[in-house]
Length: 192
Ligand code: ADP
Figure 1 (spheres, rainbow, N blue to C red):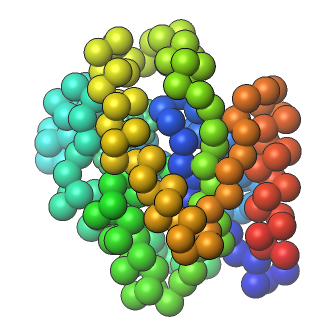
Figure 2: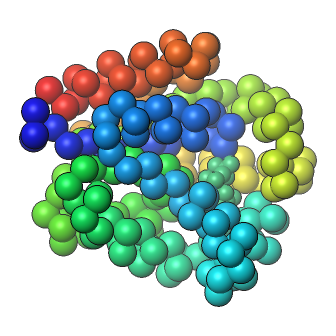
């Protein structure tokens, strides 16, 4: 079906399994996986100006400014591979300002979102998972800060998407394959 290009957002707490599931969804549906965390980490590793601006903020568990993030994503969304094959946005939008920015970008590109999926995993569980994975920015303080920012800034976006008829919630507890099957079911339904 040529009409069924997937353009989706995945939301969920840090440690919800978003990254892992996103790779699988992108492969399954043939779209680009655009993880803003990956983009920023690559910039930090490459030592670019963006990377130098972002490094300290990321290690402290803060959010990189909307003035940096919105143009970054806007530019990427307009590129040919995403225009033709679709996109899975992972880690964006994270603030109301970014959500409004996304809406404006899509309008400009004459595109519509298929769905925004909330991969739902309780706070206690994600905290355990993050402590176990030990990424550089997974110190206890940074984890607490990131989860706090999520509740404060990103969780309200669930209502924002719901108001637009775009929100679906998927239970993120259980085996990876099981969770993937749930996600796939919801996406297939929305694309049909
Ligand atoms: P996590 O979901 O565990 O925070 P990510 O890989 O999504 O991991 O993001 C890592 C860090 O990159 C965030 O803590 C934040 O500092 C920064 N970041 C990623 N996406 C955004 C965004 N959309 N807006 C602001 N900062 C972001």
